[in-house]
Figure 1 (cartoon, rainbow over the protein chains, first blue to last red):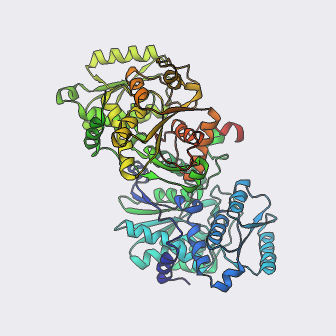
Figure 2 (spheres, rainbow over the protein chains, first blue to last red):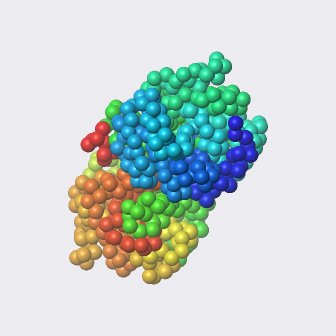
Figure 3 (cartoon, one colour):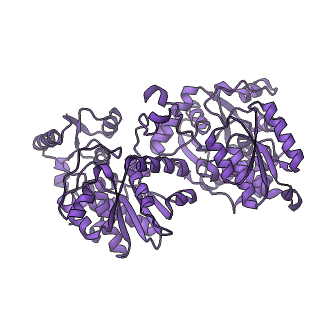
Amino acid sequence: MPGFDDVTASATRIAPFVHRTPVITSRSLDEWLGCTAFVKAEHLQRVGAFKFRGATNAVQSLSEDDARRGVAAHSSGNHAAALALAAATRGIRCDIVMPKDAHAVKLQAVGRYGARITLSERTVESREATLRRVVEETGAVEVHPFDNVDVIAGAGTAMLELCDAVDGLDVVVTPVGGGGLSSGTCIAAHGIDPSIRVLGGEPARADDAARSLATGTRQPPLPPTTIADGLLTGLSERTFAILREHLDAIVTVGEDEIVAAMRVVWERTKQLVEPSAAVAFAAARKASLDGARVGIICSGGNVDLDALPWAAGDA
Amino acid sequence: MPGFDDVTASATRIAPFVHRTPVITSRSLDEWLGCTAFVKAEHLQRVGAFKFRGATNAVQSLSEDDARRGVAAHSSGNHAAALALAAATRGIRCDIVMPKDAHAVKLQAVGRYGARITLSERTVESREATLRRVVEETGAVEVHPFDNVDVIAGAGTAMLELCDAVDGLDVVVTPVGGGGLSSGTCIAAHGIDPSIRVLGGEPARADDAARSLATGTRQPPLPPTTIADGLLTGLSERTFAILREHLDAIVTVGEDEIVAAMRVVWERTKQLVEPSAAVAFAAARKASLDGARVGIICSGGNVDLDALPWAAGDA
């Protein structure tokens, strides 16, 4: 289990490689949210997502011997690009398993950073089997996108920076997918001030974390049907345990609420945030945090501009 | 004619009311542009556009007697919202003439700031006649969107701040519409360092400034057919004279180049910039400014999200 010391050590380790992202405020966004928001702009992080923090921490934590083996992961999302760039930054080999039907833009992004891509079928079984084969062949170290102490500690550094920049936060809100970002944020927040309330935002259509916390037993994810495509994964035993200990509540939001939040953030802050990040904004609004000082971890900005959710109805 | 002193005086006058916008840099944007760019982020200015600087300077420069008369303008774009908020900030009356077919979002924005809206027909003649009637009825002071010394001086303050934040700029690029922003930028740039090259970006489909400078005679604007809807207006005698004296060149860009630039800026910087602002990026790329340190005045971020230029082909 990662602790607060791991987060602070991670911050020092990754500082030379990551952007210290700005904190964005907006009066008109506050009006919409009903609170005073401090947006940690991880969509402006390298590769456009907080994932670069954890991937960099994992890669930079490797011993020389392990680094020589290279790293590997299966991912069709931000973790793939993050790990590829983190490996390139250390000059080591990176293997990424991606499903055949991954978006061309995502394949290109990973390829641009010099990672070797192996295609799999779309199913989780095929992805995992393909990754096992790649790891056997190459001897690479697997870096899981969230079920990894270094990745969680790295993710927590965003909250560390936010608390450094903003005093007296009452609440912090993050999106919840596999639980890496929310776990890291919990550990960082409560290491700094145990009174900070930590809320998770989760799509109602992918509410396994909410159900897991409500029942006290880890629940499997439903078939993925949400626009927030970074939040499809279920919790691991590790992230479930961390969230049970630290998280105050999960706020589930519908697809309409996610799309509305995304559009409001775009219009009022001129920042391109992705649907998964918009979940945190939607949850903050829904939680009615009257007048509170609220940190929002804006997880990423990688949007498919050819498939915007409001295009169908209005174009 | 406004001089450098007017720009510096304006900067002091408007400082309490405007955002000191950040300067954005991006390695991957630089790769695309072929130079080292420093983006003055006026899309993050209040009302989402640099126009708030000039409008605020004009409103705050009014004598008490004139202020009591209120201000008026005809505009369907960023100047309307800018003048409305500038007037509200001083607590004075504002009348805006807008064409009947103006976008509902723009009407709402102006209304939200408390301005009184009078609708006109779409033609320039109708807008001007309606404005004359409003001014006669109310006694308001007309604040022209660009043919106004205070507005031009106010617009120049963005360049002043950019030079304050970034040393050794070789070039600065602005979009050119009526010439207010480009004139203010010229005056500020050459007041600071006469060796800074100032380039204007103009849509090829609205290239009256390029033709005016090429022929030495002010040319009327063509019928407006560009996506860069903030750049439809022709120069005034005043802005034409300033640009003739100061501007190094105008780079005209096609619609495809504007759309491509807008999309690249969105994807690589996660910043929502409007088509008129994208013209400056497209021009900077086209000018092949190899290795130069290039300021780009990113004029605004008010985008119609229901009518994105790439939606038609791909959605």
